[in-house]
Image (cartoon, rainbow, N blue to C red):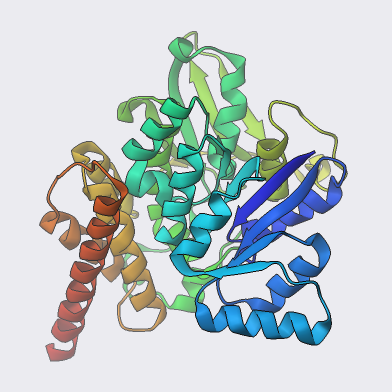
Length: 395
């Protein structure tokens, strides 16, 4: 039986990971959980899985959680909080697998520590490889461990690559739904509302990833991730629009053969694959409904409609601190858009301005990544204020 530590247990991926654990109780148990401030959800997870250690966002959350556990008569695990708590979960001595599903750079240090310790890491957190891909992959190589992707696109590529050798790969093809604005007239994008941008046609996701899908910066992040995960050149990674989200990604080999992975829009499938790899374990939870599968459409991804794709490739090409700045600027810009302080088209504008101000310095240690992230966020907030002031001053 393998023991799991989950970073981001109360988020969407964390909850679905626990659903997989509950469906396969003979294979997995939970050693440690890290959450933020959703204490009610965490309380239920503690009650069901009895982890040895949990971490929450801050000291106030830790005190509140301890009180709730006493009130309900639930045996309390060891409770930590903040950055130290996240690292304690990622480095838990009994954890065989660490699921990195925390949103944002909050999970970066803990995931890096888990990789350094030689733990098997199932990776869902995009920021880990976007912000610090070179550092993290160097640590994985030194530890002799492969990162197992949880995101449906990279998980699909991982599965397809089992059909050939690295030298036989011509290119990787990431599929994208195109989000809610795939066919929206370009002139209408300036007036897009947060409610419209959050209405993803295929997936139920958190706020930031939903907006990232609408701008397709998420696909830009995935290009960067694929470059690190699979050791291919940037020019070997393509993106195509596939509105049905049934083909999760494809691999084209040098002989012209193409392998594709198909599945339902349900994250439990790639999560289970990552947790049970190299085995494939029977599951009655999810399956593709062939009766509803009528057609599979593919079309080019326009950088005119989705300028964030161009910006992500630029950041990847220049390297250094730019991918880290790309992620940080996007997070700040998305928050401003959701709060009504920035128009939808202001998101790529803020990102582009921050990238233009970011030096190409390479990272030698994790503290430098975190410092670059903080500086990019500062610049992004500055750019948001500048755009807001310009809009307010306009007649």
